[in-house]
Image 1 (cartoon, helix red, strand yellow):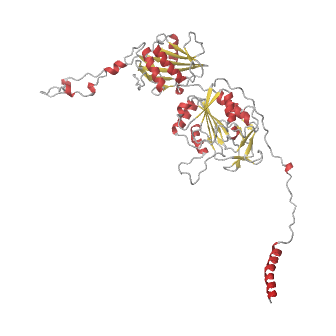
Image 2 (cartoon, rainbow, N blue to C red):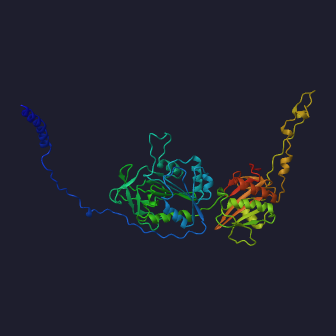
Image 3 (cartoon, rainbow, N blue to C red):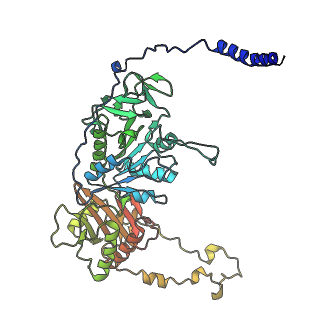
Length: 510
């Protein structure tokens, strides 16, 4: 009986296990043959790898400045765009960067180009106005975004105004009638091993595309513009926004005023990782040459950064270069020039040298010609003012009989009538040499006693800055004023600025 129970127990344990094994396992596994693709026959189109283009040795002294934006949450580092930086420096460009707290308007005065790559923090209205004015007077703006460099919003982040890189770029590009699409381009037929690695072979004729036969962009936005698209995609290129083919361009060059705006929907081709693909390196070198060679013409809006090389000081005969004036001019030199010693007073200046002319409003013939060219009228016609209305007598006032005209006692005269201006008048008593009034274009006739005029003349390679006051004494005060405050208190019309010697507001006299 005991043995029977044991057999029954063993059977209950073994039989279910055997049934399970028979049900789920049909025997020893057999390996089925799998038909593998012939990888050797797959032809993936890879762009040729270009060799390093030798760069010139940088000059001893830079001749232009390129300002790179690092103040708007830019998703880029300087090391990533090292190929562009090295190419710029080899062509004589100096690299400057923005800081978190900086004055964009002041920084742009010394910049030949402003580059902002993948910004994620919006530009203020004042910054947009400054950049628009900067481009209008000849500056170059380069802005690039990238679909792979954008903002990630999580629940842990404080919610507020969230802008994508495309939004930030488009707000900045709004004055230039150009925009970047929030998409990416892809090509299932002509690509570099990945549908987002688009190969471009059609180019417009421009300095930026010179000697460029093939570009590869590794994920790029399309750009819409009415100006120069620079490149065109193939008919097999699609936009992710519509999944429809079309004639797309990830670049655009916009002419605005005297300057230009280069818009790039992809910045990978500027980076060290992808610069050697196809002709990306050639494009980078062309870009460096474009932003360093296109020297913009300076205007008074750029004061005091007006000269790029040595300049001579030319005082008129009635401006005495004494110790006081030379000390003041040395301070102006530090503001105007990066290096000391770039301002000299030679006995015989070259006809093509940059000049700073100091003169009164009683100039010699050559200086008078320069002032006339700026539209200054040293002999304006006097404007006759209407005669003052005579004070009415007692009869005209129709005072009733028996009443006398009231006379206020001395102690009832207002405080304003008791103000003594003698001290201020004496402190500003200046000798006037030349006309007492002159005519300025767009400003009318102004008294010269406390007037300071700054004019800028561009003649080919020569730049002339002329500073005129009523006397030599006023010249000292005026140079001190513009050294400290620039032209902030001046009325600027084109390349002519009218200022008070003491920085107060001027009022036209007629």
